[in-house]
Structure formats: structure tokens, C-alpha cells
Amino acid sequence: MHLASKKLSEVKKISLKQDSSSEGVLSVIQSAQDIPFKIERSFFIKVSQAQVVRGKHAHRTLSQFMICLSGKIEITVDDSRSKCTYELSGPENGILVPPGIWCEQIFKTKDSILLVLCDAPYNESDYIRDYEDFQSYVKQQNEILNRIPIRLNLGCGGRPLPDYINIDMDTLEQIRRRYPNHEFSDDLMVVQYDIFNLPYPDNSVDEIRADGLIEHLPFIDEPRFFTEIVRVVKPDGMIYLSTVDFEKTVREWLETEDDWKDFFRNDQEAILNHHWFGTYTYEPVNRWGYLTATIYGSQNGAGQFHTNCYTEKKLRAICKHMNLEVVSIERFRWKGDRDHMLGMAAKKDHKN
Image (cartoon, rainbow, N blue to C red; front, side, top):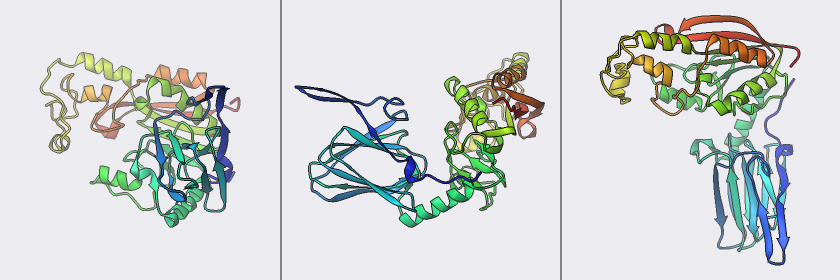
């Protein structure tokens, strides 16, 4: 099955709920009810003269909902193949602009005010401000989405894999800066897809990997993640997950000496010398060393906090709940000498 990058059919004009009376009009916008995302950021643009052009950029991952509060505004959307223009002249309707769409706004009157609701905070690296760069981005996305077989490596971090579509919060260049002692091929595909809303139809993905990811998911996101990966993977498609073996880690923590040495440090010297609360080792020499980081995450930066935990029985129970067949369970040490890990291979049942 061949897919396509974002197209104009995914741009939507949405009518807003209004309560009219002799005193005026009340318009209501509720996250995930009136618009299909949780609002994380909002801003408005007021111009001082007519015919001002704003926007002229696309976003890699950000979704936006645009409302004309007053005046008249033309919103032009472009998927690199075709364009469409919407005219808004009041708060009765708004335009949903998904990521991967070039967007420009023309403020037709000087009293025009545009309100923009976003599903994520400001992030300059998410912007594509040059149109030729946008065209190249769309071409790359089409190549990625049309790759056969489709193998996804979710939350790849510093472990992007060849022949996989590697999905992470960081771009390849950001990964290179984060891991300066590693070399990463230019041929690697690293994209910033939403792991809870993957751009693939049901039953279309051949394989999914997620190494050292699920322990980072808050409780509320755990069912969203498992529901999404089961949705996109093919019947008989494989899912490989690895995570901290919480039971073994806790047992080892309880059996280890209670010998606190020092407060946590994450400066460069401490990281290079494996400070770990003054123990200077990955070995479980006391409770308040790397064992504590195994439970709570390394906490050296964003995305390095553990907010969930797993045992073999829990993984098997989740698979049963999701109609996944457990093929194998293995135990190993992360990077050979660190966290006690569980590795699970599971296959999607035809009942899904």
C-alpha cells in the first residue's frame, strides 16, 4: 500500500458552536471536541493596514486552527502540488491546518485579527520557512511513506537503524549534536511523527520496534501507545519492545547496601566520568547509584525520565488484552553492563 504526505483534503473548515442572543454572540471552542487536538499554545495577529501577508511557512509536526476574530482574512494552503484559498470574515468558522502544509494569510482589511490555536508550544526547529525547502521536505516524506516494507523504529534516540523509518523527538542533526562521539550515516531516515497518531492506515506497517521507550510513557499515554501500534501493524506483523525489568531492578535495589554518597550531577564532567550520585560506576554498588537512575531515568535532559514500569507478567497481560501473541521474552543488560532489561517479540493476531 502506497501512502502520501499531507494533502489539501486534510485541511478542514470547521464550524464553531455559537450561542446568539440580543446581546451578541458567544463562540465556544473546546479541545478535542470542537477541534481535533488539545490546545497547548495560542496567539493572535492584529495588523495596522490592509493587504498584509503573514505566515509563509509550514510545520513539520504542529497542527493549527485559525479563526478570524474580525475583519476579513484569506488563508491559502499548499501541499506542493496544488493550492486552495479559504476566506474567513468572522468567528463562525475556522480552518484546521495540519503539519506538512504550506500556509499564507492575507489580511484583507486593516481591522483583521487572526487567532491561532496550536497543539504544541513554540519550537523554531519545527518551522520550514523556505518554499524550496518545503518542496524537498514533501518529496522526502513521500519517499519515506512509500517505502516497502514499512519498518518503524519508535523513540530511536541515539540508536537510529538503517532500513527503518526512525521516529524521534529530535532530527538527525539534533541527534548528532546530542551524541557527538557517535557517527550517523546521512542515509538514515529520522522523522518527527507523533507516536500516538502515526501517518499510516490500519494494518499497513510490517514491523515496529521500540527499544527503551515505554518506560518513559505516562500512565495516561500507555493505552494510547499500544492501541496505535496495534492499529497500524499488519496481521502477523511483528512488534519488538524492550524496557527496564522493574521486578529484577527492585529486587537488586533492596539487596544492595543503603550507602548514599552525593547529590546527582549532570554537568559534562559528571556525565563523562559516570558520577551517578558519587559512585562513579554503572555497577550496583549501592542503592543510591545507577540503580536509582534505572528506576527513575537518567534525568540528564528532556525525555530521560521514567514514568512507568513493566514486568514480564504485565507485558504478557497487555499482549493478551490487545490480542497480540507473545513470540518470545528475553532478558539482557542495556548496552551490556547497565539496566536489567526485558525484550519482547509479539505478533498481531488476525482478530485485530
